[in-house]
Length: 289
Image 1 (cartoon, helix red, strand yellow):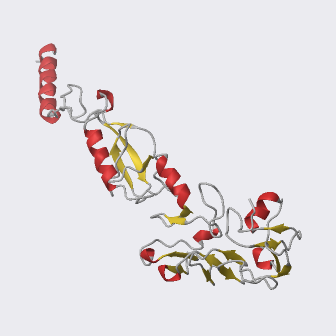
Image 2 (cartoon, rainbow, N blue to C red):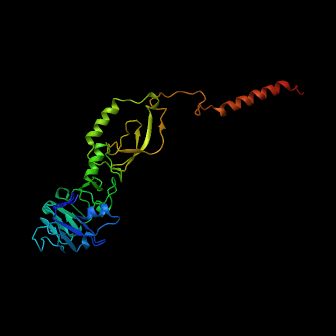
Image 3 (cartoon, rainbow, N blue to C red):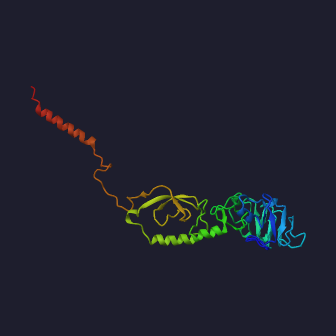
């Protein structure tokens, strides 16, 4: 709601004259919520003083009553606000909440990030130019801080907190684990060890693909989770059906009709058979004198 000290979004003592429709609003966010179009903050030329109501060119101090429109003012973004150590980032093209020395601009990500992430984050080109994968709202120009996931993707910090509250621990875009999960994997090891599968599934395996390291491997099937054989993660996906290994842990049986019957010496038996037939023929023939 607008007042002499601004709105719910910004603390300021002026109204912006929208270059698109000529209407007066405290800020672009208030304008966009009421109208069916968006205000271009960079094209704002005039403001109205909230005290003396004088319309004048955009500047930090009222030319008539000398009221300061904002402790912070950017003549590029036409941003008036309470001093929050803001600074205008030229590569980003907009103002950021500072202080400036606590942030750096990553050229590949095309975004200002906390100094603690310098050289320690995975870069994704122009990642901030994508909408938040949770709420589908703009990230680059959002007043809500961005959270960088281990995979390099971005989402609003508030959306990330909502994910964790709902027990969602994977990136909505690539399914990589959204935080350090090693302790949780160890807990799953113990829980699975204490929860054996029914006897008909004891020797069942399945092919899996790991969402964390992208490796393909074989794992024992378990309803609680299947562990990656490469990195130990349980953030895996089943790749194909169950494989029954029925012969595992069973003694080998001897089959009488097996394919490997003992060989017989047919060559040694054949002559004996011929001799017997010859003897029979000699006995049957009459003696010729």
